[in-house]
Length: 369
Image 1: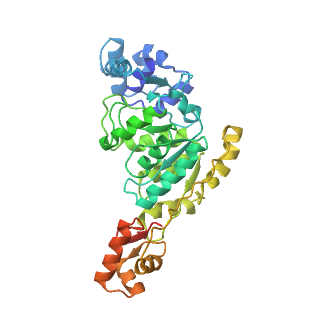
Image 2 (image 1 turned 90 degrees about the vertical axis):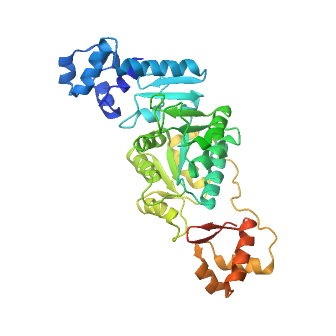
Image 3 (image 1 turned 120 degrees about the horizontal axis):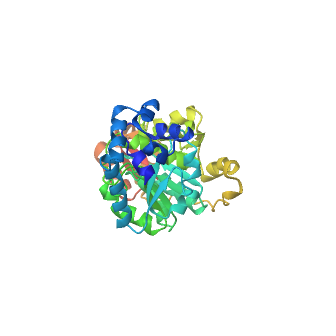
């Protein structure tokens, strides 16, 4: 439990812990040192006080150890992985700021299989979720583990695509390992465990979903993965943070382009402009990662058709659908291109939406089929 104690020291984050380890200051050595040595190492007063309290058998470090022990005892599938242990993921260990500890529920061996992160907007469009599901389905069937952050939208769609095939997926939490967030994903989280996947967190049990935890969580998602696929992302979003962290970590970044007037496409277009691989099919990802993963990457599964066949449409409905094109189009633009009056066009749009051919998106409509 020395690693847990060090991870709980105030002011000793992942970077400091890595620096100490590289200087041969192992957790056991650090915990046994004296105040003069801690001061020489540059530790702040709060950190030194916590370490002194630990040596006296009290304080927050002992509390952290107690929390982790209680959590491990509570769940038979709970595991503690430490930065100095054999079970720690190799790719994650190679980043600049690997977490000192990882708390895991599920199958820890999944972390040693090749992974691809699939991330995107929480407020994703139906098209975005469809893309996340179809790409994740084929990537998972090809032998890659899908890794994401368990959020609404793209993350949930990616996890579910793997779990629905009884294939493992890794959910990285921005909370403690005992705090499911968002709570509405409870059934999906349970499905992940039942299909051989795992939950993962660097945070102590009981840690709530605070805003500052999620950017830290993103470096784990990218650090575990050989590549990151961004499906939909606004210009300022956590998905772009994950993608840029991936670039810093030397990982491949892939982005799916979208309509020019769809705000959720702007982040992907920015990434492509900055050098991300433009993706139109799963093969684009497999080809790029093949050289990196070598023979460890299985042959890709047969491609899955993304587009659904059109349902039976009346002549007027088909005319409106054809007039929409494949980019976001406003009601005013549709009135101009179709020549219809508002009542008739509105009726046709309602029918097309009920038949699953279009969806209302932002300030207009988007064709789905």
